[in-house]
Image 1 (cartoon, rainbow, N blue to C red):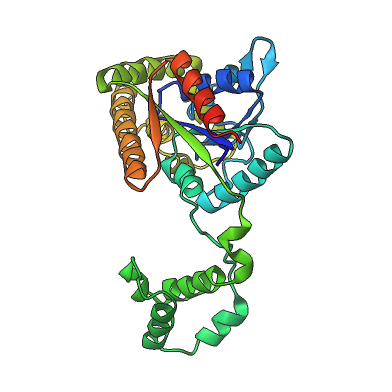
Image 2 (image 1 turned 60 degrees about the vertical axis):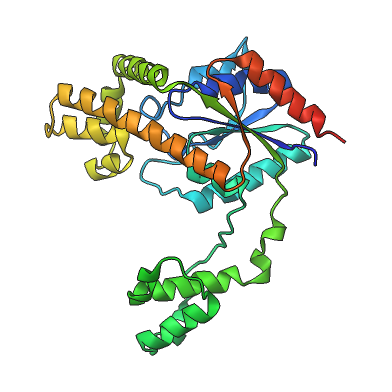
Length: 307
């Protein structure tokens, strides 16, 4: 099948965004971000948006799913998948090549392996019907709908039981069937660095971002009404800096702890990508920073699968 999506993934600090922007500029494509935090406005330095990367030789490369929500709003994999499909379909109608770029493995996997996540809004009528049933009856209903239940703890909590029944009913609704979603035929490329080199890149980038005002960014967000708890929920940079600003840790403890945490996060990202490969997602790994290698393999993939 003809490839209709280019995916460029990699761990934090791998330089995937700058590579993708060059590629999009050359191929006339547009970027769709697969980053769980870059959707938030005002969270620029800490999330590594690197907005200057999207300016290339006097042009601005269009990028989607960046700066679409305020920090107090929620975003999840269901919302990502829904918005991705909408953007993907629009770009394909315009005959524009989409490039999905990011490091949030769950978001990438939801598209590449076609997670089936129906929109299961709370159903007041169903909840009323279930209200008078005993736990054993609710358990029987759920198990009859989904015999292979992975999370057995859902059977032990009444509220979670009812919610799972709602979700399963939505899943069985023909109008939610995954055949309604666009067909994705992706060529997937990963940006890879040796561990020691990636560690150096993480250290250098952290120092640069601190110098660029990352601490001030977190302080400003709090002054604008984002609670400390909400900031800490974003993890990594926001968690450590929020704790530092609250004087729970020193600046030195913040910098050292953050560098370690980012390194651990990068390792978890690579573990997720390897797990995706085991699930059948073919990832072609490109040496970090080698744009010519990436370009050549992307062009080969596009030509090889053209009709």
